[in-house]
Amino acid sequence: MKALVLKDKGLWKDMRVEEVETPSPQKGELLVKVHAVGLNPVDYKTATNGMAAWSYPHILGLDVAGVVVEAGEGVIGWQKGDRVVYHGDFTKKGGYAEYAIITAHTASRIPESVSFEDAAALPTAGYTAYQALHRKLPMNQMETILIHGGAGGVGGFGVQLAKLAGKTVISTASSHNHDDVKALGADYVIDYREEDVNARVLEITNGRGVDAVVDAVSRQSATDSLEALAYMGHMVYIAGAPDFTKIKPFTKVVSFHEIALAAAHQSTDMDAQRDFAVMGDEMLSLLAAGKLDAMVKEVVNLEEVPEALSRLSERHVKGKIVAKLS
Image (cartoon, rainbow, N blue to C red; front, top):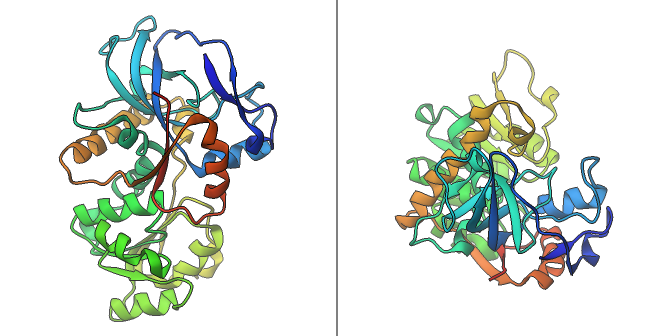
């Protein structure tokens, strides 16, 4: 099969399409003919330093949408021809290839009305946002949520999911992206370059602060946002833990929540792994109903992935980029 191969750690900008051996599904696995793959920062981040579990040449690509061509031993509920999307295990070879492997119990079925490209935009960013909001936060106990980076993948899905849950959503974005983030459902959008975000949040909430912050930007961003939290507030961090010492004991009584979506693949908790499929089913249902925007802003071919990842690494890409293979 054809695949975009990583020859060694740090060489992701030099990846080229080459012929490699087609994998075979083992017990409990599906072999998928890949139609589309979502691009994510985790691709270039893991490729920069490599992983001990990898053998080279390696294949990146976690968010795969395609068609089942073969089911391994013991697989129930899937058959050849089924349309499928999944979040892959980044310790294994991924989906920048004509064929890829996934465990059957972590995959979701794509409704006929949803395109492969839209489905492939979901897993890493969408499931992360879903996990942050609906697995970590007591959503029935909160009214206001600050979601950083509303023009990006995690932030954009987070804004939509929080608004669908009936919350007052505050987000951050560059000024030229404000209209787009508001169209996703944000009630307020703050220009993080020109405004004091915490001061503006306190103004919007009449000095109280927000019930929760979802931060997928950086450790520093999460630390800075602690000031925006209300009493008994929740900090959900995805791109690095905040400096916990900034909140003194017996003051705001903040709850902290780490999100590490991919860790479920390395766990022995089958329920945690099956939750990939549960989250995928729910988000695909929202897509099919027209209640969720997959935010696909650009579709590239396999050869164009390295250049697209390079732009993604500069952190100014809006929405999602998806590679189309067939």
